[in-house]
Image (cartoon, rainbow, N blue to C red; front, side, top):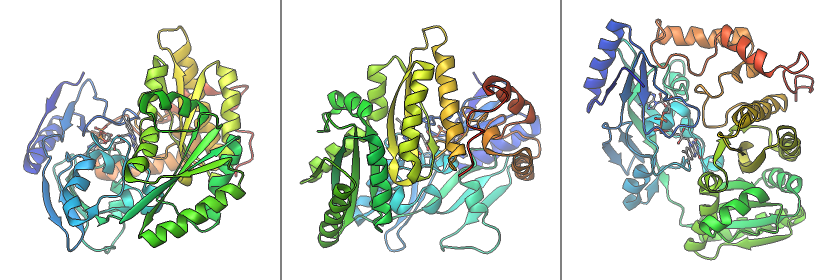
Length: 445
Ligand SMILES: Cc1cc2nc3c(=O)[nH]c(=O)nc-3n(C[C@H](O)[C@H](O)[C@H](O)COP(=O)(O)OP(=O)(O)OC[C@H]3O[C@@H](n4cnc5c(N)ncnc54)[C@H](O)[C@@H]3O)c2cc1C
């Protein structure tokens, strides 16, 4: 429970709130729609929640420059809806896009199905305005692809509300492709499906989306949304092609060829827009489907090099046995971003603790395989311990130095994203096995 909540309606009010909090030395936690999955918007008991929900206007939509200037509280999907009459859309599409805000997307550098081809939030934001905790205005980027000086725009994107409170964002819009089709491929082995992902990219194809679900995920999803998934398959891949009719026909044929060569046991190509959306609806509803089959679930988010997908899946099977918990797997496979969903029941003694350790092991393995502890959900408070596995003390100190340059008193979103030495010592005590962090003995890839 925070001390108070502020609901400003204008950027000028945001600035005043920040100035007052700075004068009072009161912590401030910016909040968008509260859909974040790493606890980044969790309030501080001695601080203020600064909700940006009422800054929800699309300020300008320029179909000639293909840009939209929006306030941070605008919902992600609302941008594409507003751009649709001009044949344009905003590409980054988190599964939460009906609810999450552009401000939250910027703070988390959010991704989605279409980010493999069109980039993450950082690749689709041209500029932003905001305020430091002192109420000093910050203007980063601009209308052009590059600006002079250090790239502070990229630094601000993904900074999890630690550096600046964003009050305006200029987004890049792109033309909506005239045709899109999805190839749904079945595999009798998850490792083969993982290898097929690498084969598609190696063939020089960058699909508009390339997602993977294991059998545990398809079995959970199918009764919920009737997506038409092959429940006999150990894993399915969804590969989308978009462009003109000719481009899509050629690419779909090439994708099918590569998938069959990689051992797919069957391919179905969507024959209508309704069928394409149906295939995606299963993937997009995987999280709520987990909620139907288990009292609780813990959604992980890590990234590994694509070539290790099969290895990671086998390791997760071992962890299921070790922790006596089930785990269903959905992936943004094209960019190696994993979302294992660990199923547990918090009312059963010890289950949450086991789920927590299971999750930490997955993230430690991501690091050992040459990946990262977050693909798109950010660090927040959830993965702050795993930051100690990913980064050395001197790297973490460099992050703190950047934080201090923007917020010398540490008032913006304190306790999130960057762990203190003390925090790392605590994490070490909880997760060290036989004197070593899990997978510390694996050669670094
Ligand atoms: C069902 C479900 C599916 C999801 N799927 C995806 C997915 O596919 N891809 C993905 O990337 N994420 C996904 N998410 C996670 C989440 O939706 C994203 O992280 C989203 O960007 C959070 O936006 P929000 O507005 O809810 O932010 P919040 O949760 O309110 O805040 C998140 C962080 O942003 C900061 N913040 C918010 N607004 C501002 C601002 N104006 N200025 C500075 N800091 C700010 C907060 O302090 C906090 O640290 C999913 C979540 C759910 C519940």
